[in-house]
Length: 338
Image (cartoon, rainbow, N blue to C red; front, side):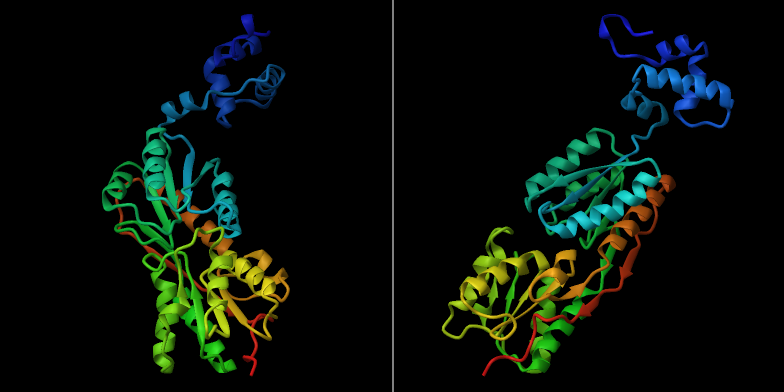
C-alpha cells in the first residue's frame, strides 16, 4: 500500500498494512524481544517493501535521546583527526550512535557556533579536539546541557584524554643532541596554544645547556602552508639549523617538500623529527622519526568515556586518562654534516 500523493509513509500506515498495532511496529523498530518472530518478519517485510524510514526526530523526542554526538576538530585535512574519528565512530556506532564531525578550521568563532547550534539540535554529547580554548562561558553552557569529553584540550570540570607527549617530545630533542645537533629549529602553528610541545623543546635545550635562538622557533602560517613556509624561512637563515622538529607529522610533510626543493638531503644535510606517527609517516622517503600516539585508542577511549557519561547523567568528578606515547626512530635523523 503506497501512500496517496507520494506522502511519506507513517508508522500508522505500516501498522495498517501489516495488520498489527502501532505499538507492535514501534517495538519492531526498537528491536524489542516482545514481538514474535512471525509478526516481526511480517512487519519488517512491509517496512522494506515501502522503503519506510522512521522519523528519528520524533523518536528522539519520545526517548529523550537523539543518539547523536558531535566531534569538534580543528583541521579535517590532517590525517590525525581522521584516525581519531575512526576510533570514536567504532565505539559510538556499536551502540547505535551517529557522529557529527565539525571542522572548526582553528577559529574560535566556529567552535562557539557549532556548540550552540548542535546543542540546540538536541545532541546527547560532545568530544572536543581543538587547539583553541573558546571561552569558559561557552563550556559552562556545554556542561549544563550535554555530556562532554575533551581530547588533549584541557577544559575545567570536563573529562580529559591525554598522552604523555611532553616527555617523549623531549626524548626526540635529546636524540638529536646525542647525534651531535646543536642548531635545532622548531615549527608550530601558534606559540600561545602549542605550549606543551614547545615546552619540551625549550626545557630540553635548557637541561642540555644549549641556547635557543629566537629565529629558530617559527609560527604564524596557515596550517596548510606552515611546514613548507617555515622550513624555507629556517633554511634561508645565515646559520640554518641542522635539524628541525615539527609539531605534527602533517606539518613535517611541508618541511620535507621545502628541504627537497632546496636540493638538500634528509637526513644527510638536515634531520627531521615530529609528533603523531600518522600512517603516512612510515611511508615517506626517508621514513619519519616521530612521537607515536595511539590515535585510534584515544578515539575509542573518548567514545567509551562519553557513553558512560551519557548513561550516568548525574554530575561526577572529572577524570584525566593518560595514554602512553613512544618515540619511534626511523631514517629521517642522522649526525649533522661537517
